Image 1 (cartoon, rainbow, N blue to C red):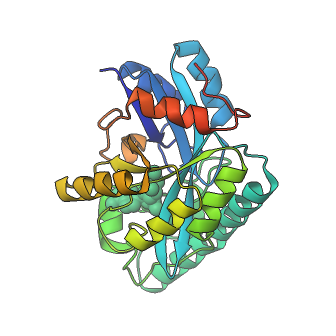
Image 2 (image 1 turned 90 degrees about the vertical axis):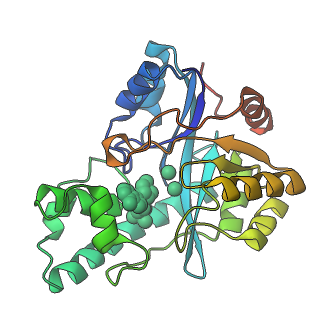
Amino acid sequence: MSGIDLHTHSTASDGTESPAEVVTSARRAGLEVIALTDHDTAHGWDEAAAAAARHGVGLVRGMEISCSRHGRSIHLLGYLVDPDHPGLATEIGYAREARVSRLRRMVEKMAADGIPLTYEQVVAQVPPGATEGRPHIADALVANGAVANRDEAFVRWLGNDSPYYVRHYAPDPVDAVRLVVEAGGVAVHAHPFGRGRGAGAGDSLIEEMAAEGLGGLEVYHRDHDEAARRHGLEMAERLDLLVTGSSDYHGAGKENRLGENTTAPGVLAEIEARASGVVPVLR
Ligand code: AMP
Ligand code: FE
Ligand code: FE
Ligand code: ZN
């Protein structure tokens, strides 16, 4: 397989492989270029860059920014952003901080309802420096033998519709698009038509994001069926957006396999051309 996979996660957030291991896995999968896009952080970038140089894998440094509006959760990929841009750094810093108390409240609600779980057990599942997320609660439940895997934990207790779900602060998606652009990067809406409540922005919000400088839509993603892909391609055409594809790899944390969806070389070239160059693609 050769290809470009523009959405992966490591132990810098909720993936199960270290940034270097993600690069090694990409090499093994025969990928030419990957993007490391951990949730709300650039924490894994340096380790991934060193591994990418060793293995001859191209690296797009990015992040997946959690956004919300009216209780809807929207994920925005920011590629080649300057992580030290003050506005962007402040926003993702707030979000990471808010995730900590939010995780504690979710665990308290679950424990109060008799689910065998302590906050200490969850903290033990969070790799040093990682952005905390629900998958770390899932990992504690797996370690406890309460569920077999992350997916079962989400289906039973951790979904957005669950009574234990607690929101955390996250920027508005239109503000986040503006920040990514100001930080010299390119913004792509991750899995815009994914399954379930809170899985995407909806067409009118995508139009608002496009007016603010959204660069593309991640059309080729396992959460999109044929109809969603067709709709995404139509919207991208109408709003003059790039079309990307990716695996959204989380190591052993999800079934998603590296390279299962990929991005055309010309689209990556366009992302590279639109970025400020402060954070280049490493090859
Ligand atoms: P959070 O960032 O805390 O809101 O948690 C959301 C994350 O949970 C997403 O980025 C996914 O990686 C993960 N996730 C959502 N649903 C599932 C699932 N069914 N199985 C495994 N991981 C999931
Ligand atoms: Fe994730
Ligand atoms: Fe996502
Ligand atoms: Zn993701």
